[in-house]
Length: 178
Image (cartoon, rainbow, N blue to C red):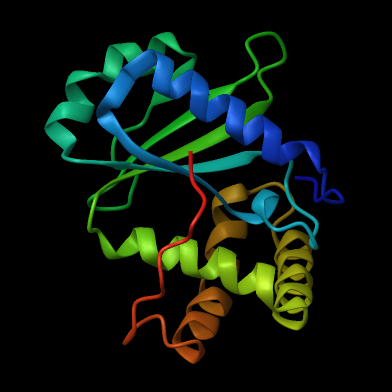
């Protein structure tokens, strides 16, 4: 696992991938957001774009599974997170992971939580640097296990979210999405 300096091109890659998804499955995507560390310009990140798509309902999304797979995504269902659909996209030649796609039904609290955390990191360099330090700590503890790495960061993230009021007060919706 590698944490690399922010690449300003990640935003454009996220936008392009959102267009690929819209082209493959049309209007089922109500909004597609760039989330995760690649969406935070001030910190290092794994070079994998995280996208979060809002859909009206999972029945419609599930009916379009083949269209999403035809855009190069591997469908993983909930993949351990209730009320989510998760897909990954790998480079077809190298097998290197390119994109994580997290889908939630509109109104799911996870949408605001993910967007709120991203926006908090963008707005607060001190918290962003602390998060980057936590990512490095977890990478050192779990260099070859991305699931353990994610679990390692999870408690820190939850503590920050509680401190920022994410649990009691939902954060405002962002202005920008594709």
